[in-house]
Image (cartoon, rainbow, N blue to C red):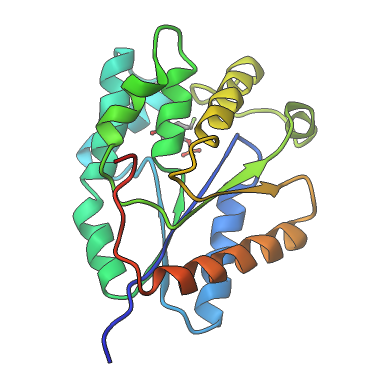
Amino acid sequence: MTCRRGALIVLEGVDKAGKTTQCNKLVQALQDSGRQTEMMKFPERTTKIGQLINSYLENKSNLEDHTVHLLFSANRWELVPLMKEKLEQGINLVVDRYAFSGVAFTSAKPGFSLEWCMNPDMGLPKPDLVMFLQLSPSEAAQRGQFGTERYETTVFQKAVQQKFELLMKDPSVKWQVIDAARNIEDVHADIKNHSVDAINAAENEPIGELWK
Ligand code: FDM
């Protein structure tokens, strides 16, 4: 029997939407149903590039805006060989943030076009499904205070949300909007169903190239 490839499933969304909780629950559910699945997250803060990003996000260092954008992208590219290897072995990857966060966060800064921001990520492995956990700024505010990392302010998060909305208009990417205002289990059930469909559809398809 030929080995069917794994699916690349991405969760995106603004802060407080529950991405990390839902990624963990999805990985567990897929594993419990006998599907080999692993979780990844970006930024991957453990590599040398990731450590530079981590110190920037924790406000321990400053980096020029173009530079940090390219570091976030490089942090994805450095993981591409590993991602491809896993997908080809039939392992599904559930990824907490990807190039869409990269573009949405940088293009929310003054002077950055969507196009410039997308360029360095062109050709990354293309997700088989991107789920956007939708939560209005007022619902997000009810979930408590933002943390202390860079970008964790209401004004910036609103700008980021608008950029995500622009990215979701791109029909070359398989987007699915998920209403994240519901309870954790209902959101999870929805995410799991969409993921199983994407896994079944991806099996016989080659891995695509993002934005190419
Ligand atoms: N972020 C994340 C970016 O600005 N660019 C990127 O490419 C990625 C992947 O980093 F504020 C931002 C988004 C968020 C922060 O936070 C990472 P978490 O809590 O580790 O997801």
